[in-house]
Length: 234
Image (cartoon, rainbow, N blue to C red; front, side):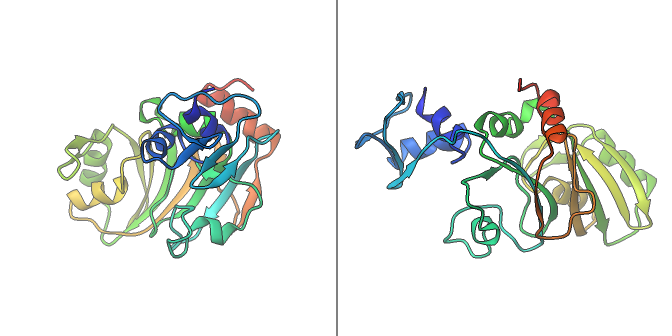
């Protein structure tokens, strides 16, 4: 098995991030620095930054209500990181991040295939958000958001999306991509500031009645339906 896939299946990171770790010289196999494309065999000792990583016998699938102020990283040097907040006994990582000032649903897992699938932009998996802004939502604003918005700072036009007003200054939006601070950038383009932003759904997984900071295991039905929708065989 290639080293990037091995690290992904260990829940260390995505395959792309694993490639960067290898290139930076942070990964070793049996005491020798790994290279891009290095193979891992049964019984090999793999270290990442000096710490041994082992593939678990079974995989874990969690949903977490990320509170505002928690940073989507497991790097302990970062204040208010996920690792310290969760204190979970298994090494997991997120399949799609939320920025520090946003809250809501995070999918956490040590299933590298799921992480890879969810982090690949071309797969267009749905993510649903509730957003409150600083001035009244108009039909003109909604139409412009639906059509796709050119983000000058990223030099990209967002995909068309579904968006519906839910109050005088609030709306619900469904995206199929995850650009950096996408909703905030889209709103700023039309002179709107985001006051609160909450992710309610990822694919079929719902935030439901969870409270900030709460962690739950996915039910078998939730997990199986998610895998079916993203195209991964159980």
